[in-house]
Length: 488
Ligand code: AMP
Ligand code: ZN
Image 1 (cartoon, helix red, strand yellow):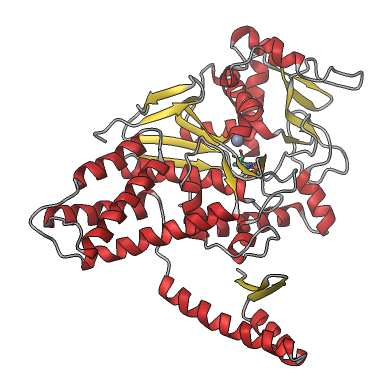
Image 2 (image 1 turned 90 degrees about the vertical axis):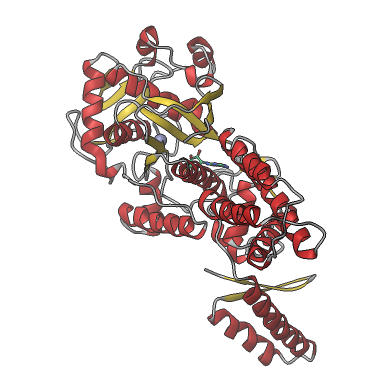
């Protein structure tokens, strides 16, 4: 922990020197997935970004308690505390219990995280497992005078809160502007103010996920779970809170308000937000319907894909852009990442075969220092990767005899590249040699199938397709030829 680390804090809108509240301990909370459907690649980007943060903090020697929740209750279709519950709707459509939906998509999420080599968090609490904590917090907010009950629903009083604490600090907005940008209340609305949001929602008779509370049977609003669970596991004030940028204006703004109204303390020292993964410039989201599933990418089955990409290529692609920049999804970018990743790993594999000389032609400690400097500058993984490419260039040049490296520098490079590639970036080696053999055999099988088709021997061509399907290899006939991919 010798080098200072700087983190961009959304709250102050500048990079700040990282000084944990109680070093060497660091508390980090990241808003996890809402498990009523599969996570898409955009969600993955956020979780891979915080995996990088977690790994780097641990690499620096901090003892990190990383809490990432599972949202398994309290999400309504409308964003104004109205509409059908998303879990209940999915359960109704699939004719299963809501908790079966939760289980299915939680398992799917864990599988995707495992494939992209994201470390599991220290604690993964669920909203439904912390109903008591949420009720206690709501009771405290009411008794502090910042919430009110109407017909079994409890609302947070934003205007009252704003008389004590500024409400829109995270996005630097004034209350009047926020109110002006919100729909006027109608006669049917129960809430007192336009920005008021539900802490607890009265359950209609048909609502399946429900719990008893001092206000009758109901279920928690979405924001309160994160306030209750973060304070339970990390304390009333903790170091880092993260999530995607889309959560700043409402979810995180309301989290700050709830915690402050309950404990009279600002809950978080450093707020971190990841930028969005986009497709043709449009944010990838469940509602926009432009969400790629990671499995579709690994199998190459999505219509916009030319081919399949390995989980490590996808992870590398994500880390090649800074977490605060948007990342646009394209075949070209993924292909470039695939090549870059292979080049890096091939060069790393050459390290053990290099013969050292008396002196080095490149200043290796400077190269390594620049990599660390990049990570200390708000986790700048693309600059670290650029330094690793420079290391790869040196390795190739030494191997070709056009440059030299000393024994000490070779040892340093071996240790540091290992740390950067595997510990910090969390990449895993892939068996490219075997991949090439598999690719060769499959291309041969597909050529035989195409010849059978040309001869109108459909029995043989169909048999090949079906047999490949049985071993989870899917083939796709397009006007440009036949491609194949392995399903997970
Ligand atoms: P959700 O399951 O929708 O609650 O989202 C889980 C996490 O993914 C949150 O931190 C979101 O901010 C984040 N997220 C959602 N869409 C994207 C996207 N297109 N790019 C990056 N992160 C996203
Ligand atoms: Zn949250």
